[in-house]
Image 1 (cartoon, rainbow, N blue to C red):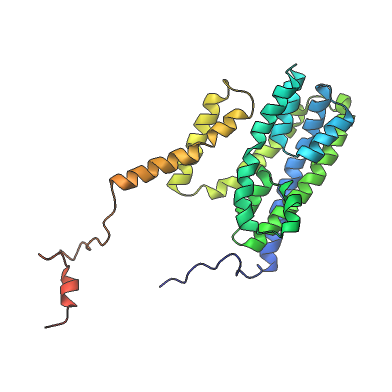
Image 2 (cartoon, helix red, strand yellow):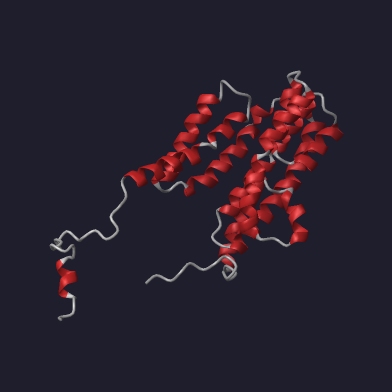
Length: 268
């Protein structure tokens, strides 16, 4: 009989090599994605935001998709309230991350308001990829701290040097974050269900990309998970597996028992 899985609370501290791996991965994500702050600073300056407004967004909002959606809409001449509403809508996904991370990290109450500021795509992905609570906390903290500091520093440099930097797409900074995020999630796509969810998410995102504002197709793609799970559950209900199927070399007897079962019955 297999031993029951060790609860996260009872898991021992991982060895130094495992902790070093978590720190290495977290630093890689933080540095790679943090460079995107250059692109945001340049975009915000082009949209007419001041240095103070741009830096305040990175310090207080700290969620790249919402920040880019806000400044892009304002740069295109959109209504500030409508732009803020779209940014808020994109940021609601972090609330769902928080529900999962609150059960995984189990942080002290005094730290939860501070940790909530760091609940974003990257910190959630790093934390959820770990096998124990200690590693999840370590990955969340290192990723959040690295990304928060670097994102704000590069935002400041980007908005101050917007005229000298030019188009951020020419530097490839806009692709750094998605590339690292995909590299982090790729090892988690193992089974048929995970592959089906990923494939459907890609189809939904690409299908709605030319029809909806930036960022919204990603939210629609998130529906792939419940859709695949619902379809999988419906298929299992229609074709339930037998509870105790007989082995191929053990044909069932008239009373439903296999030959092995009848041989084990005590004589009366």
